Image 1 (cartoon, helix red, strand yellow):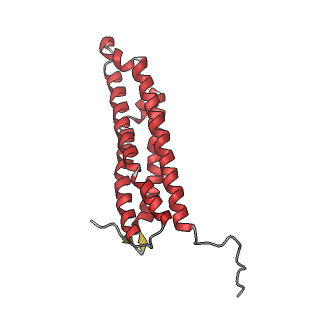
Image 2 (tube, one colour):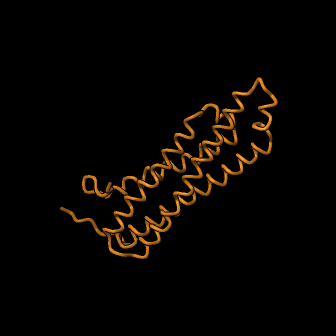
Image 3 (cartoon, helix red, strand yellow):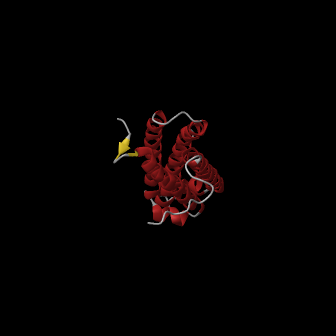
Length: 172
């Protein structure tokens, strides 16, 4: 399947907006759900589904970016952007796995309320602390990576595409 153009625009330029929204949003939801179990209960299955959507969007955007890279002149800025872009998939996988784990642990805690012994390990401070710390690391790391990729992409796209001085408007 080739992800090339839609109505004359490179698909990468369109899909990148999905990644820029979904990955940080999934990170924010994951952190919120891990830190505040009542938020996790309200989100329920929506949290891992959101993280899965973010995960799926990453390789689609990367594939479309590789198509675009083959159709532009070789440029060190484009190569740097592509290298950084290739590094987002592990972060997206981590977000999804952690979102699914946090959802599952919170579901177990809710389901085993009558059985305090079975719920003990799920509600234990080390498990909650690990979930919060890992969520913060994964959430902040993935969001920083999205920023770095986006900034390098903007530099690659715009480094010679505008003038530092304003052009006078032609009057008709």
